[in-house]
Picture 1 (spheres, rainbow, N blue to C red):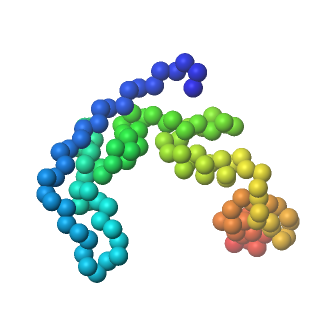
Picture 2 (tube, one colour):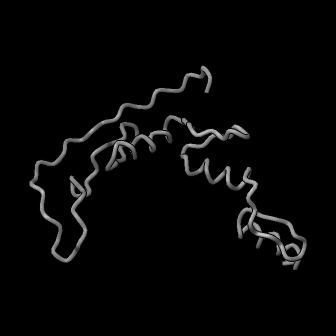
Picture 3 (cartoon, rainbow, N blue to C red):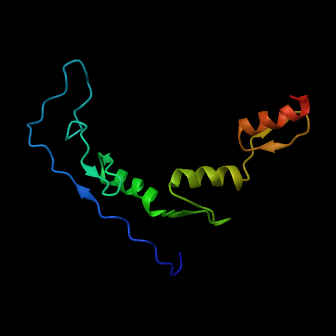
Length: 125
């Protein structure tokens, strides 16, 4: 982003991990017990005090408070807080792949929902 200084995200606060001994998963499940803290949050936002199980989740959440929108569309420069939103934007607005075709006028659309909305114009709904 060429020389633009971005605001510093708030510091992350890690909560102390529980000292309880880990228990094996219940006998009725085949799933391994992969939650070290039994699902209890390990990281806390120091602005709104919401708890998160991972540092990554807290970092993504912190963009709500900082206003940081690190994912920028290379075509139109619109920015997004989450990569998935940028990818969906690009697919809908800039993709040349338009697999849904109107059988009345041959207009092409990125999503089936857009085709259905368009088709309603033909039938007067």
